[in-house]
Length: 308
Ligand SMILES: Nc1ncnc2c1ncn2[C@@H]1O[C@H](COP(=O)(O)OP(=O)(O)O)[C@@H](O)[C@H]1O
Ligand SMILES: [Mg+2]
Image 1 (cartoon, rainbow, N blue to C red):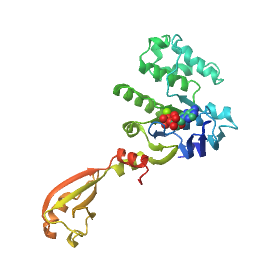
Image 2 (cartoon, rainbow, N blue to C red):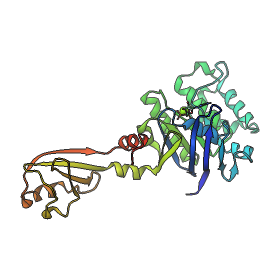
Image 3 (tube, rainbow, N blue to C red):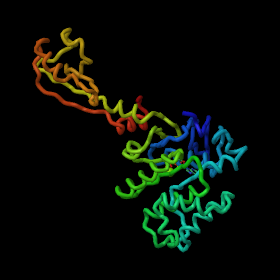
Image 4 (cartoon, rainbow, N blue to C red):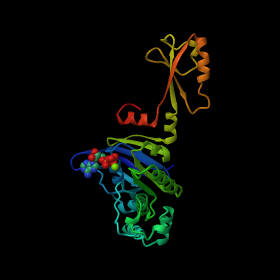
């Protein structure tokens, strides 16, 4: 699918000399949900703020549907909505007015029919005349999304939309995001929750220390996670894989064990066949242990600088 946002060789060094983005290259595909997963201080907010024109890049280029975010700021900015990490709303303002004001900031003419659609989509229509201070935390977050959608952007950035939010609200937020995707909005969200990336993303990007370490289809990552390993301890340790077991994906472990790698999600794991082949190879089973690599392993390894 075509990229709607293209980021090339983007760097950001703050005034104090801190290099928050090293050299980011990233294409965001039209219509996808991309989760940028990274620990605190990784550069997630810096990246999003730079794309949204709130922070100036030190070098590199960003285009949104072909519009350069510096040279063609207005056209690029009009296509983008941003839900910032921090909730900042006027407590005494009413919901509809808050959202209408946001639309005005983008030079959008008054279009209450559009705002009604947005508020209904976010289940806020009944609260349109409520003051912000009367709303629950979850509703305030929805108001932030409504503000970001007020000028009908095609790309929506959500910076840690569920940080510090309880499980129910988190699921609620995921449903909102999925609804927006169904409406054709491209969504980029940052998170430090692995489960969140797993739950809603089409692609997952891992960011740490100002670098994007990996961007991959979630399904492909899940497949990698599906790889399981079983360590087979034998009565008598082995030094090589017996010829009778050559058909199996086996390696020799540290203490003369056999390590069998298999696809846990596959139709057949091959475990039964392997176990019944052990006596043919003159081996006696003593003990087995299994382990599964998870997105968390992949994430921790990458972020700690090991090879994936
Ligand atoms: N205005 C700033 N001046 C100097 N350093 C900053 C500024 N904003 C962020 N940083 C630093 O840049 C790094 C990345 O920050 P940020 O983009 O907020 O990370 P994240 O959103 O992933 O937690 C952090 O080390 C942070 O301290
Ligand atoms: Mg942040």
